[in-house]
Amino acid sequence: MVDFAGWEMPLHYGSQLEEHRVVRSRAGVFDVSHMTVVDISGSEALAFLRHLLANDVAQLTARGQAIYSCMLNDGGGILDDLIVYYLSEGRYRLVVNAATREKDLQWMQGLAGTMDLRVRERADMAMLAVQGPEAPAQVAEQVEATTARKLAELKPFQGLETGDWLIARTGYTGEDGFEIILPQRQVVSLWEHLLEAGVSPCGLGARDSLRLEAGLCLYGQDMDEQTSPLTSNLGWTVAWEPGERAFVGRAALEAERDSGPRERLAGLILEERGMLRRDQAVQLPDGGKGVITSGGFSPLLGRSIAMARVPVSAADRGNVTLRGRSLPVRIVRLPFVRKGKSLVG
Amino acid sequence: MSNLPGDLKYAATHEWARLDDDGLVTVGITDHAQEALGDLVFVETPELDSQVQAGEGCAVVESVKAASDIYAPVAGVIVDSNSRLQDEPELVNSDPYGDGWIMRIRPEEEDDIERLMTADDYEQMLAEEDED
Image 1 (spheres, rainbow over the protein chains, first blue to last red):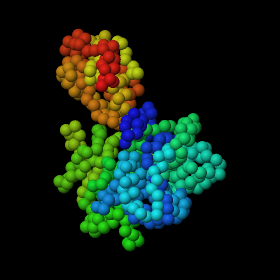
Image 2 (cartoon, chains in turn green, purple):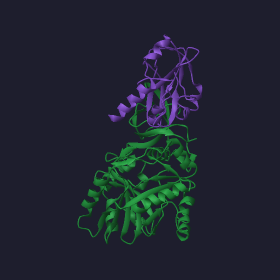
Image 3 (tube, each protein chain N blue to C red):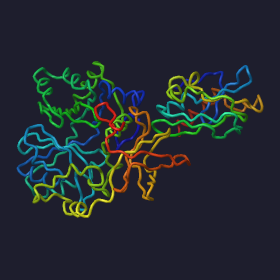
C-alpha cells in the first residue's frame, strides 16, 4: 500500500505485470475513487466552463458526451487535466486529479465569482474503471438489460447517466472499457460482483505502466504549471476556434504557438536492458538535452520505455546514462501501444 | 509473512546463502526482498571468474519499482550464474530460494558463511525494521 494524495492505495494486488497483461488481454478493475468529482450546475455553467477550460465545452451537445481538457493558469501553464461530462442543460461533471483537489476547487470558485452557478464537490461519489477488451461485456453483466443495450451503443468519450450512476466509455489504459461514477455506498458491492465475475483487481502500478504504454500524460510528472499543452503533446486538446472565446491562458498560449514551442513530449525506447526512470537526462546527438518525465517497463514491448520532454529539433536517436553507462534510446511518437498492439515496431 | 528456510544463512542486505556439498556457496535474494521489490524485469548476473569481497556489489536486480544491488555475502570467486534469469527474471519472484538463485561463489574460507545471520536473526532484523 502507498500513500497517494492522502489516499491509501495498493500498488498491486499480487503482481503488477500480471495485472498489466490482464487489462491488455481480458479485463481488470481499478478503484479510482481518489479522483475528485466536481459538479458544475447553473444557468451560467456553460459560459463558465468555456472560460475555465482550454478545450471547448460547447462541442458537447449530446447528454453524457465528454471531452478531455487542460485547465490553464494565465501563463498557459497546466493547473490540471480533466474530463468534463455534459449531463444535461446547465449540468456538467468534471473529474479532476486527487493531488490537485484543493487548488482546483479554489481556482474554480475564484473564477466563478458571482456567476450564476454552483461548484459542488461530490465526495459522496466513488469511481471504478473497468478496462480491457472484455470490459464492456463484463460491465453489461452488472446492469439492467435496457442499460446494457444503451451502453453497447456508446462510442469512446460518450457516457450514460442512469439514476445516480454515470457510466462512460473512457479510461486511462489505451484499452476499451468504462469508467463508472457511482454512490460510495454502492461501490463495494459492484467491486465484489466484478471480481466474482472474473475481472481482476488492479493497482496503481499497472495503472501507471498501462497509461505510459498508451502515451497518456500523468499530471505532476509529464506536465505541470510550468509546462503548456503545446509542449505536452496536448496541442490537440486546445480549441482555438472560435477565436473570440476568451479562455484562461489563451493569450500566453497564442504567443507560444506563434513563436513556435521549443519542446515537445516524445516517447523513448531503450533497446538494451535497463530501466528508464523519471528525471534521467536525455543527450541528443546535436548537443541538445531532454529529460525523462515518466519511465518504466513496458510489459508489451518487453523493454523499458519513457516519456521525455525534448527540444523540438530532436530526431530519432538519443542517449541516456544508466548506472554509469551511456545507452542508446530510440525517440518515437506517442503512444507506444493502442488496443493491445505495439505501434512502434 | 515471508518464507525463511532454516537451513540458509542471511545477509543484512537481504541475500541468502547456502554452503553446498561441493563446497560452493549458492546465493539469491530473500522472499522478503523480492516481495519488497515487486515484479522483477531484469537481472544483471555477475561476471564469471571475478573475484569478490564480502559485501561487494556484484549483480543488479531491477524491478518495476527500483534497481537494487546484490552484494556477495562471502568473499571468493564467482563460478556460476543463473542464465535462466536472462529471459525469466520472474523466477526470482516465484521461487527465490530455488530456481530464482542468482550466483554461486567458491568461497575463500568455507566457514566465512558462518558470519551471516541465521533465519531467526534475520527474522528478528526484519521485525525491528518493521517497527521503525
